[in-house]
Image (cartoon, one colour):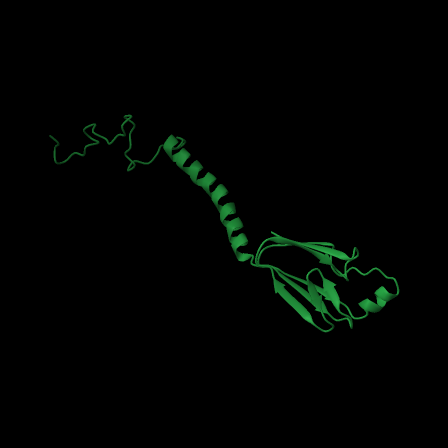
Length: 154
């Protein structure tokens, strides 16, 4: 039985783990003595978790914050006249890649009707169309160098 004036440590009953190691944290660690292996591994795991988790969280946040993109093309005034003189005009790319939810905007500042794939854009008109599902859309294009356009939506 313990004497009321002594502590368990005085009697050799210091707390230990199941391997018999001293777990009494009330006593400071001796200077120059390395931390217990458990403390090193916990710190290492925490550091590795931060190195892995933080970049993943950043990437996910960036992906969620980037919504649909608007792709805008302007047919400048005088485009039809330039084409009449034999100039090859390239306002639109031959291959256009969009994501589901993206918008295609075509502003026709020319005095002629322009065709872009499935779409006809009259003089002074602005076409703004969203793409709600994946697909490949092919057609004639009066403002691409090849005279054709392929719009691929993924």
